[in-house]
Amino acid sequence: MAERVFKRKLYEKMLAWKQERDGQTALLIKGARRVGKSTIAEEFAKREYESYILIDFTEAPQDVRDLFEDISDLDSLLFQLQYHYNTRLTPRKSVIIFDEVQDCPLARQAIKKLVKDHRYDYIETGSLISIKRNTKNIRIPSEETRLDMNPMDYEEFRWALGDTVTVDLLHEAFDAKRPLGDGIMRKLLRDFRLYMLVGGMPQAVNAYLDTNNLSSVDAVKREIIELYADDFRKIDPTGKATRMFYAVPGQLSKNASRYQISSVIEQGKHERVEEILQDMEDSKVVIFSHHADDPNVGLSLHEDIGRYKMFLNDTGLFVTLAFWDKSVTENVIYQKLLSNKLSADLGYVYENMVAQMLTAAGHKLFYHTWPTESGKHNYEIDFLLSRGAKLWPLEVKSSGYKSHVSLDSFCKKYSDRISERFLIYTKDYRKDEATTFLPVVMTMFL
Image 1 (tube, rainbow, N blue to C red):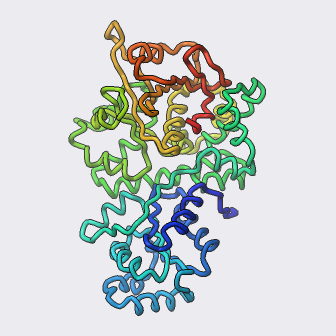
Image 2 (cartoon, one colour):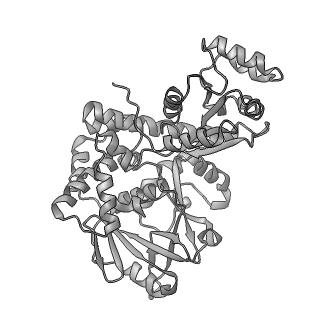
Image 3 (tube, rainbow, N blue to C red):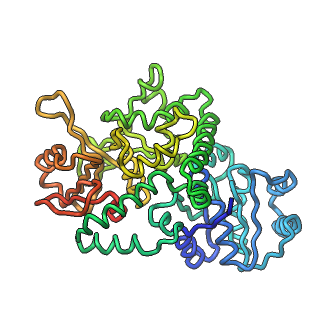
C-alpha cells in the first residue's frame, strides 16, 4: 500500500505559529488517534526547517526517556539527542518533535525550559485524554500554542482525490445563493456520499485510493474503531465508555431527544458516568451536542450538561459502526448507500455528517427540544448556531423535506431571536420565503 502525505489545512496554522511566535512557544497538536498528527508534524519539519529530530515516545528507548529525568544541563541533553538520532541541529533553524508526548510526561514538562532556551523550535503531538491522564504529577507548560486536528474535511478529501476545483465552485454558488441544477447536484451528492462512506481518516482514504474497494476501506476503519475501543477500555476498565461508544449509531437511530445511558448501561445515570463522559469528549473520538434549555445568544450559558446527543468524529467510522453486526460491511451495502438506494432511514447518518462538518468549522454544538401542543411528542431543532445577536436554527432531513414542522414552530416561538433559518437536505439550493434549503454538501460554509 502506497504511503501518501495529504494536504491538510492545519499546515497553514502551523506556518502562522512558526512565523508569528518565532520559538516563543512550543506547538501542541492534539486530536484523536490516526487523524494524521504525526504525519503533518514530520512533513512540516521536513519542509520548513534545515533539520529535525523526531522522538516517537511510543517506541523511544529507555536511555532517551532517561535524558528528561534531569534537564539541569541543556547542553548535554541536546547533544545527546543529536548523537542518538545522528542529526545535526542548527540554532533557530531546526525543530525537535515530541511525538505522542503523553507517553513521556517529563519531556512535556521540559518544554518550559527548552522554549526559554530558544535554541530550537518544538512541536508536540498527542491525544488530549492521554495527555490529561499522564500529567497529573508534572507541571504543565504554559508556553504552548495548541491546535486541534480533526479527520480530513470534505475539501481535504477532494484534494486527496485530485480535485481542487469543486469546493471553490460550491463556495461561489453558496455566496451567490445560486441553485446548481439537478444534473450537477446528483453528481455532487454522489461524490459527497462517497466521502460519508470512506470518511476522513487518512488511512481509510489511502486504502480507497489504493484499492478503489470499499470493503477494503471498511477493514481499515474497523481497525481504527477497535483501537478506539481499546483506548476507552484503558481509561475506563469497567467497560462503560466502550459500550457507550459502540452504542452511538443505535442511539441516534432511535430519534430520541437525548443519549439514553440507561438503555446502554444498567442503572446508568449521568452523574454516575460524568467523569467517563468528560474523558470521552476529551478523546475527540466522539462529538457531544448539548441541549440548550433557553435557545438564545450565549448558548453555553443555557447548556444542560446532563442532556446531550453523541456523534462520531468521523462519519466514515460511523457507517462502519452502524453495520458492526457484520464482520465486514459488504461492497453491496456500500454501493447501495453510495447510490442512495438502501431502504433503511439514513437520517441519523446525515445528522452525524452535519455534526462533523460543523465541528470542523469550529462550532460548539447545541440543539433544542420542546413539547408539541398535544404533549405526546417533542419538536426538535437539530443544531443551533449563534450569529451576532441572533440565532440560526438548523433542521437536517435526508428525505421528506417539504415537511419542516419543528423549524416552523421554533421560528414562530422565537421569531425575535432568529436572523436566518436553514433546512439541510439532499437536494439543490433554494429559498422558500424565510427558509433556506441548503444542500448538505454546503454545510461547511455556515
